[in-house]
Amino acid sequence: MAKAHSVFFCQNCGAQSPKWIGRCPACGEWNTYLEEFIKKETPRESSMGEIKAGKKYVPVSIDKISKGIEERMDTGTAELNRVLGGGLVPGSLVLIGGEPGIGKSTLMLQVALRFKKRKILYVTGEESDQQIKMRADRIGASNPECMILTETNTQNIFRFLEQIEPDVLVIDSIQTLYTERIDSSPGSISQIRECAAELQRYAKLTDTPVILIGHITKDGMLAGPKVLEHMVDTVLQFEGDRHYGFRILRSVKNRFGSTSELGIFEMTDKGLREISNPSEILISQRDEDVSGVAIAATIEGQRPMLVETQALVGSAAYGTPQRSATGFDVKRLNMLLAVLEKRAGFKLGIKDVFLNIAGGIRVDDPAIDLAIISSVMSSNADIPIPQHYCFAGEVGLSGEIRAVNRIEQRVAEADKLGFEKVFVSTYARKSIDKKKYKAEIVFVRKIEDLIKALFA
Ligand code: TYD
Ligand code: MG
Image (cartoon, rainbow, N blue to C red):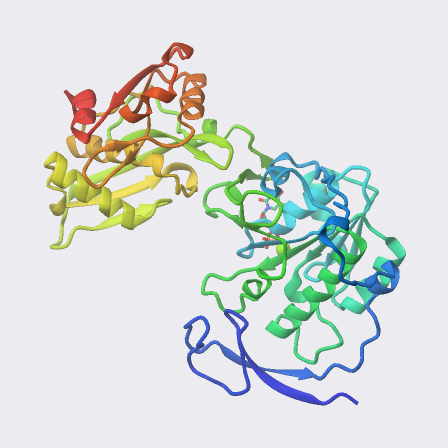
């Protein structure tokens, strides 16, 4: 008979210890250790995947390994395909993380309903099948090949998998599953890890892609998915501001593609709508010029995207000036302000500066720098920047405007959307064929040049 023993697990990073400790030596978090009871494994009955595939692993020469199924599955949702790097890879384990209520279940149900000509099994441990049906009605799609199973016990799930043999398996959510092999309660680190390991074996042995949904809470406790990140092939993060309708699907780890791709959706009353042309929604429509607004030509992944940066500069009411940035790194903002102070003589030390990237998205592309300093200066001087101006350049510490990658693509996107002037670095002159565009290309070398061009 199995012997039960207890282990303490860090609920943040999954490290284990035989005793309780206050501070996790692995991740440095405080008070994250919880006791979990684990049954020592009895020689286990083989899981379903192993029986079915009848595979045994032996060492083979790398030359003799066949490439396997290269073909990716088209999920029927273009934005998801993009983030996955071109579609779902057979046998891959994909984790979709996100805060509760952000729309993970909606996204995956929608994908399941649009996956044509494939058998999908959607396992839910969180909602009843009636609730799922109501959601499907709301989305307004149906698919006879999509089966719903309300179950949380992995052994039972594997039994059904054997019968149904789906082409794709969706688990909503990994935190609700439990395996009989382990004694601790569902949602604990050891359960999550063991369930994921069982599903991973199943995915690899049957070449079925498995999509796991996982919750992440703001304070990181009860996270669990962190532990899974090592185990799965792809980690997608579904995020967004709940006050905006926009949702961004970002790839954090991808063994089969780039991690810089973004998928953009809008939550509507009929489910998630894919946004294939993000520039149009990220730039607010206005009739007149206002100060403190500048448009940046950024690139996320392979896709050029024009985003609006908004700045508000005011006199600091209290001794220390306030700095805040939404959708942008506040440290980088401080650096840009310091450069402005030194190079352009702005007395920003006595000013509050608030920066916002419109649409609730987050931008890491350094090419946004030029638009940010332009919007800050515009707000500071209270002189609007004309709406048909657009910016793409990185700002260096000495105030020089540096060239950014794929400038042609950025200029082409701005040109296509009808911008009349595009400000770029002088150092990008060689890579731009001016004749190709209707828009005028303005080359700037230093911040001083930019000020002259904008406000002189
Ligand atoms: P849900 O997918 O359940 O989020 P998660 O699985 O990440 O916890 O739903 C998220 C929210 O979306 C919920 O508050 C209701 C809302 N919603 C819509 O606005 N429109 C819709 O068509 C649907 C199905 C949900
Ligand atoms: Mg859900």
